[in-house]
Length: 150
Ligand SMILES: [Zn+2]
Image (tube, rainbow, N blue to C red; front, side, top):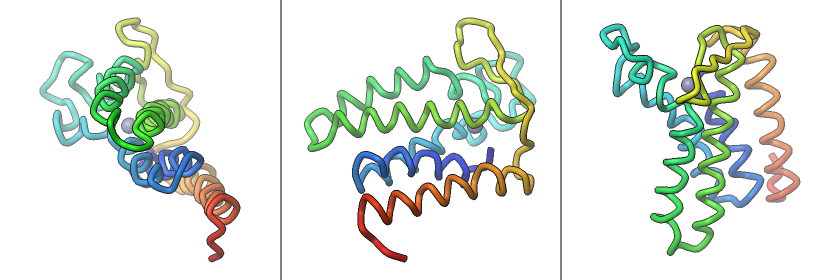
């Protein structure tokens, strides 16, 4: 999925908890795709983990990042909630990416590959059937939970 779709997923999760969670969710929702910046598209890497949809798209990464963020945020108000939002937003990223046509191994070190091959990245189908419904859910959360009327 594209960055906007992942961020929408994270924003919704964060928005369900608190308004500051929206920012945390947006960042965490898009974070796993940092592997593109770190490793490129993975052409020069033979090891799966350092390719796009490698280590940053695993439950292991999500758990490690959640534990680290938990201890960092522990002393802040809502710190535990923020750590939970980070985990759920990372999880939403992994789940959304399984809808695409590129395999990922979310249960690493298990070799189980998941790829549902439903929607191609950046196509009108993604925006129409994934991003738009997520956006409408976000609008609903903003209106009902935060009483902002657009
Ligand atoms: Zn991704």
